Image 1: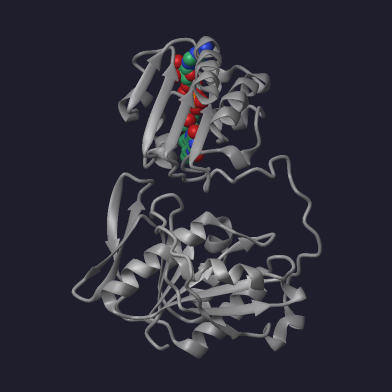
Image 2: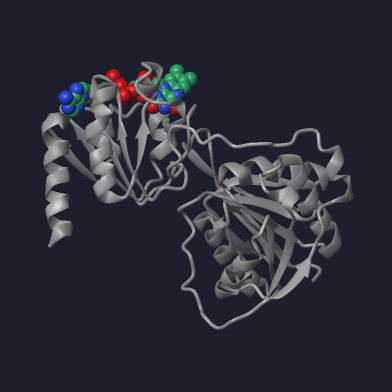
Length: 329
Ligand code: FAD
């Protein structure tokens, strides 16, 4: 298996994350170009039945660590487990989905393996037989190309919603290689003993493909109710500007931008958001941006693909109604 690509497949409550399938799909594209093997790593409690999902995206080998010890995510424990796998199979590349878990794990693994990590990659390509990543720098003002020439394995986290998922191919199977939890598990510095779901057990905005976001123009917390209705008909999640978060109208986990989350949904609808540079840093790589603002000079319109100049309290409910009608047809 040496020189393979190892992809960490994140699951939560037994559900494989879409961002993991994106990483697996990109791993497959790169593995084909380099003519090397693609290997998936799956860690969790009672996740064995999810293995059959993985060969559909091109992997023929799955490293499985299944144990009651993995009921909850353990940063230290999962990292040790992946390091153990990497030491055993010696991959040349490790990919993580750029989810909260992937972003937490990847630096731990990179530090343990004394190698390099490029995070939040928006492209991976092969140049002169070497893998090269493109990643945003200076809050997305420019994109840099990064390679990790002097250390192995090269580790990358992939921004969610950027890399397309391959069409699944049914009827394929994978060899499963079992990895027990590391014997040092008792020494873990921190252990999760329970998870209390917060206000939004809904999809994290970094993984949502549709986001309806509100800013100071929402005027107050109740303004977000009309955004929630629009998000519900579209099957999306709620985002916010820092102004709305700082005002206490919505929790910080919804904040988009330089000091919030960086997102790449297919559709971003910005309502009552002016488009400050620090906000754009978090959402400018969205595929389609729609801005609703009563000020036609608002900078958000420069970033938007579609703009509606008007009062959001009139526009948003009408938009919701029209989409509801369209969906009912
Ligand atoms: P405003 O700029 O006040 O814009 C409100 C908009 O709503 C206006 O354009 C107005 O025309 C429109 N509006 C008002 N009423 C209506 C209506 N009825 N209908 C339609 N439109 C209406 N900001 C972030 O968002 N994320 C970050 O991560 C972030 N990080 C920062 C980090 C630093 C170091 C600093 C200095 C700032 C940061 N900011 C961040 C803050 C940023 O500079 C802006 O202050 C903030 O984004 C403004 O939020 P806003 O667009 O909601 O509010």
